[in-house]
Amino acid sequence: MFSSDILIQISPYLWLTAGAFVVLALGLFVQNEKKPLFVLITCMFLLLSILSMFCIGDPVYIMNGLLLHDKFGCWFAVLLLVSLFVVVMMIPYQTKLVAEYPSAVLSLLLMSACGGLFMIFSNHLVVFFVGLELLSIPLYVLVGLGHHKGKSSEASFKYFLLGAVAAAVFIYGTALIWSSTSSMRIDELFEIFRSPLYQTLPKTFWFGLSLVVVSLLFKLGVFPFHFWIPDVYEAAPASINAWMSTASKIAVVGVLIRLFYMFPVLDSFEPEHVTSKWMITMGVFSIFSMMWGSIGGLYQKDFKRLLGYSTISHMGYVLMFISSTFGKSYDETFEVLFFYLCIYVIANLVMFLLISQSEEKQDVTVDNCKGLVTSHPVIALGFAFGLLSLAGLPPFAGFVAKFKLFYFVIGQGGIYLVIFAILSSIISVVYYFRILANMFLEDGHTTFQVQQEGRRIWLILFLAFLLILFGILPQIVQNWLF
Image 1: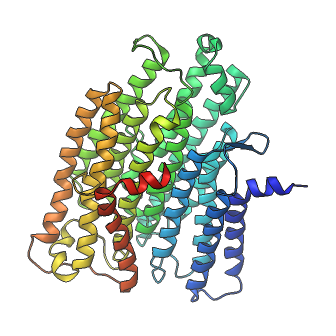
Image 2: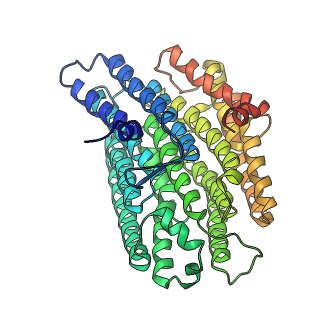
Image 3: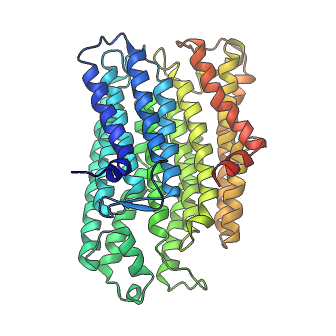
């Protein structure tokens, strides 16, 4: 029997799981036309999961130490669930995406969110793997629900195949770590790293840790493990992209910070030191990711594919930050990273959810946005806010987020990384401004058609307004959280 304390501790996962089954069962008895009821129940369970998270004391180990609930992981989890809340509210429910099976789609999204929570709070590599698959498997299905059936099915199968390879790499790496240390608990590995045993770890351990990190970089979409992102983003429904581009990134970043926090602090930068080698390797990955995402986006015509390359570039910025945080405490790094992720999540939600309001009628490309401001000025304004924030231009929040990120990395001696990051940002501004020029400066009749009622657009615009509010008053987020 579970005690009341244990039930409270696992309640965030229970609410999401219960919500998934309730919504799925409801589809057997309620007609699909009553989609607002499905949405209402899904949002209710999401809110219950968020509220129950604050009823748990922190830090506290849950389920015999398999999960670690702390305030840093809690805010990552809240960001993940709030992003799903927005996606559920904004999904165009009269489209083919959920016209026939809304309960199944919402149930899969709730189970995917539950997997994300397992990833964020995991203190054991096997629990993390379970969460990783629980987050990913629903996405393999949802990617195939795009309106281009052939292209969507191909992208879904490709995503599944590559995801299965990444999962196998993770399992093999975990097995090597266990054989080298007789442990798969992250806190026990932390103790090993901060003891003299750190110097005696066998090569099999480092090879296993490398495989685990590679599988995480695949989910993050960092070069050279990025090749699935443009195709999957192009074929998947934009509203599913809004969830996919935020959920896996939030969860994986939370785990990477936890893993690299294990490394001992460097007194001096010595190339032969193990920590230094890891910092250099992660820095190289970040440089290639930033540059590849920026240059690759220059040649894209499809809007969602372009945003895929933008994601590759932004994950390069995140990895640049992570490569500078080896051995740093959460208190030193969390504020900067979390603020950046918040702005990234809001901007991506704005962009993909605006696209979702039109994609059922036609493919959204850079060209068919010409003259958008004349026919749909409100939508053009939303796109402008999202693009300018992704570009990192003042007074939008993306500028503040990038400035904080770059300033921290420079303070850790990563000036060369910041130089590449600034160069990448300058290149990416070109394709962001090309879209804006088409929307605001080009004459002609736009083919961009909006199928959704106005209130959904205004809700999305509220998110876009937050991008400029947090850019002018970033202390709102900082004072609230820290």
